[in-house]
Image (cartoon, rainbow over all chains, first blue to last red; front, side, top):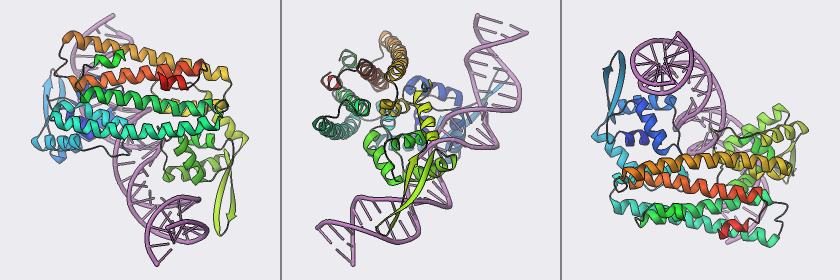
Length: 179
Length: 179
DNA sequence: ATGCGCATGTAAGCTGTTACATGATTTA
DNA sequence: TAAATCATGTAACAGCTTACATGCGCAT
């Protein structure tokens, strides 16, 4: 995934490996982290593949490298961005894509959000069914903490569903904070 | 982490590797997944360390292995469970612990939840500050999706904070669904 | 008799992290 | 002048996943 995120950071300007890390940290640091130990080797790989072009430059006595995304790299990135998320993929993988959805035609973005939202709704339904079983059994007291993680799942899914809905309808994001 | 989760699954009964996987899937599948390729080798490692004892048995013509947690294994598990989460640890790592918090004295559980909750509150404050900067710049339209992930972070943190509060106060978990 | 669920396991590979090594530049 | 930040990179290894290999037991 990091491979694609790096390409995404390079869409608007040439950056150094160090800058890329800062951009990731500031932009999606709340759900995704990348270390230099993964960024630098990947920049080498992307250069070999022709997705980016590396150029050396000097700033004072310091040697730096900045990376420029190629047309091929842009295609690779957009193909990843358009792709539906696999059902086993993490929430983070979807969020990382949404971060770059400004680069996608609005209708494609909306469609992909809706597809993801439906999966969330299905999953929430399954968890609600599971919850009902426990309520019937009425072993609530003994399994308070075991049940709590199930409830957490339900809450988290609900807040993601609400979020998806706001995005699809291009509503003011502030709505979410007031919710 | 899986190492500790496996030990946790064995606290109430002896299980086979296959059973352990089912238990994990059904219990915390909404935020944690484990494959056989990781479970079986770890069961070997835990056996060598003396945290579990393996015994072969037959069911029909089928050879099975069931695993029993030792006193040492219980100590290892409880030490992990009591430990505060490191600040760089994932939400999943905390949730996995909470799933087993029935095994902890109530006051320790409450204390650890409160510590975690405070970190969440701090983090949410930082995100709210970040959000204010963007509102002032008023580039909202251009960066709708970039901003959306920030709002997602805020919402998710808020729902986790609410969840922590319910748990600490031993409130009915149903409160969360009605929220 | 075919496929699915049960059951155990290994080997290869992926995707990172952590720790280290090196050195320039800025700021307190 | 010391510490923090900027900047690049490597080596070791952690912690998995995926795919494969094997075979039992049951239901359709």
